[in-house]
Length: 528
Image (cartoon, rainbow, N blue to C red; front, side, top):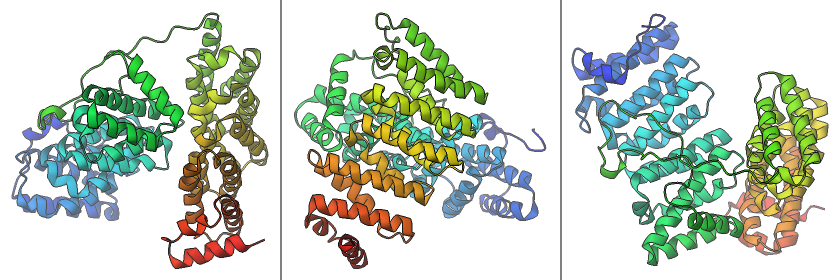
């Protein structure tokens, strides 16, 4: 017991079966869950979740009592509220309940899996370790216990989450789920198109965790398709060509060819056993994730050992709890890049350091923000394509700086953003810039991103018109419904740019849009 509540482990539940009829137990638990907030008794809600967990543990696997099935949707909705509770004990207990429900009820949970998965993904991405751990376990159980198609669909749907950390967790769990299903089986699924599309969109994410999980999935699929050959290989190659830029395709194909089995891709982070009730083995080949040996770190380039050590020290400074260390770490990074402009881009530690630099742009101290902005603006022309893997994350962080409450930070951001955009292949930036134009929290930041989206579209269109149609045009159509003056003006300017590129094709692409939106499009294009 802790603070008046009793924490129950999964393996202990069967020792405390609930008393009384199942229907009565469910009804009383639901009344307690609904009434706790009103009565101010969250401990009663915690115990009601415990009661439900004990009830679920007493049910035959895959064949729960009819009284539970009759209230299953209502129970899921109630537990979802507690999974997202600000009280960490309630959030953890509700996540444990979901894990046990997936293991006990299996496919009966499929009707609500698209509601449950996004909440668990969100909790995985939070900084509270023990809540994130339970959410990870619940998602691992979901991937094993519901049908393969529903698991893939639910996880793929979270790949467009606004939080980069949540997208990283979605990529991680999707890769692990596919690995559990077996790559040869995945190649024959109708969901393969969705899988490759999602991995293709996430392959250029700023967070290394997302890229590792995505690369893991794609390389394993390529390797298995080569082993099978024939139609499986042809289908996968067509999907890769449709969903990935050509340079990324070549890198993945080379990686699949060069990597010995068992040493690449790098293993994904371990998950703890998902259930104490024997969920493992419940679905044939999907009963767990084989262990893997982490590949040895790459050998440093000749003369690069000192640079690697300096980058290691800078990484420690950027991760410090002291704001002065963070500020100094950003300044030291710029000085190192200026001193070693050839060696730094070749260092294996650079991406980790750049991943750590991005949070400094939105850190809760403007002096740290300004140091990070100055470092990034100064480094970008020297690092150039070395920034490409983390550019999407940097663009998103810079969009937050455009909306900063600090005048100095807001003023310093546009030139830094333009330096990053000038340094990296513009085709890789269309998607993150369009996302920031759509979803940034401040309308002025969105307007600034729309201006840059138009400029990037002009550069990219001659060689990759499909990317412009997909990202720039999609964002413009969506924003036509906005009524904020600054967004209306920026959207109209973008549409006029697109009209200059596409001509009458712009209106043809709008034919499937509502009539009101088509009228707004014509008015925007005709403005001078």
